[in-house]
Length: 150
Image (tube, rainbow, N blue to C red; front, side):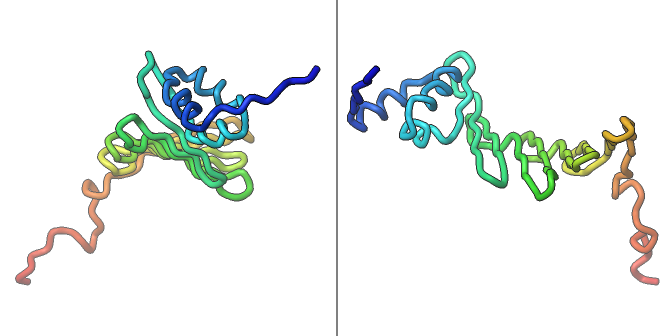
């Protein structure tokens, strides 16, 4: 069966793509042709026809932004299956997960200070929780409060 190619002017294509307001329509539009896929490189996620967040992909990282252009999540890929996942709230890191081929370490933050590690070992299926001391709660012995006169 022979299909005739139809060429749509670029202005009309831009107008059509600007009217997409659901995630499923956005995904399906990326399958239409190579030009549309390249124009829709940044993946947009919608909820009730409003832009919720968008995702950018590269060979080294995946970035997720909210509708006000603040970073929400970041995944960095390293060699040999290693990756680092960051979760942000109000531009502050609240969670960091290190993925190694057989181990995963999740760090939870409080006011940009790490306070807890969850270490999961896939080989023996164990989960270990380590509470990290706050640096201001246990000062270094040399940095204790000393009299500056003596």
